[in-house]
Structure formats: structure tokens, C-alpha cells
Length: 190
Image (cartoon, rainbow, N blue to C red; front, side):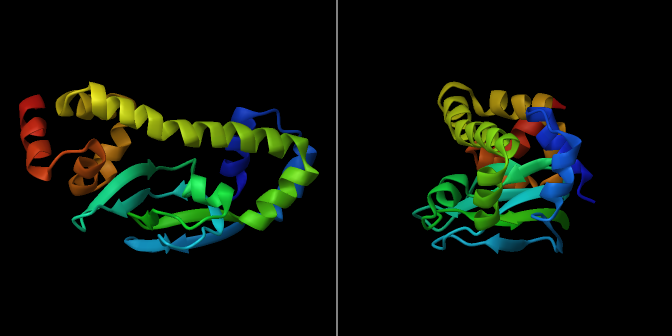
């Protein structure tokens, strides 16, 4: 159940086998039903989540009350409202399970404790945070420089599993377009 999270950590830093057993204590297993919000905006996030199976998203409500998806989480990845979790401030985003999800979670307190006890986990945390904090920059650049069709094609090329497992409404929101526009783009590509 927890081996995937350790494979993920080992893919980013050298993970000695003896540390794996040490980490196991800190990760809690959970299963969550689809369409469940597990961390709400305007609250301080409590957990970092690792996705064993399923798909998740970060989203917020814009000034008109529409949901705007800012990030997708997929199997073998981490998800949280990272800025708010790191700074322990109120989040501007919701963390939602799009599908039924099999997750591992680690609390902010336990993450800090592990960082203090393990140089390897500290290095991993820094690498993961760098990736998480750079994702919005890449997305903003794509929104500014690529057409809607180019953004969709890029998603198809780099993450085809998202298009197969996530409702098109959420994908359109992430791409910064209306669902009708995404339908037109999909028809043109076929």
C-alpha cells in the first residue's frame, strides 16, 4: 500500500532501505469517494496527500462564482495547497477527489518532524516543493503564450491519462477555456 510513495521519494533522492520503515509510521492510508473536498479554501491545510490511485484537483471560485481548476493530481503524485500548507496560512484553493481515491496522507506536523529527523526526507521535501511551486509558473506561461488548441495538444502529449479520466468541464477550466470551445477543439483534432 505504501510502497508507491517510497518509490516516488526514491525517484527524487537516494532513499536508504532503513529509512523506509522509519517513514511508514508517518503516512496514514485512506480511501475517499469521488467528488469529495478533503481540504477547503479559507482554512489552513493540514495534510500533504500522496495519490496511490485516482485523480484529484485543486480549484478555487473566481469572482463570478465559477470553479477554476489550477492543478491536477494523478497516481503516484503528491497534492496539497502547497503555498498555504508550507506557510500554514488559509488556503485560497480546495483539494477535491475527482474520482474514488486511494491516498496516503502525512500531517504538516509529522512532515516537519520527519524533515527534522531525516536529511533524506528534508532533501526530498525541498525537491518536491520546488516542483510544486514551479507548476503554476509553467501553467501561467502556457496560458499566456499558447493557443487553447496548443494547450490541449500539450496536455494530450504529456498527460493523456488526464483526458481519459477527468471530466472535460475540469479540463476546460484548467486550460482557461469554455467547455464548448474544448468540444470544438476536440472535434477538430479528431
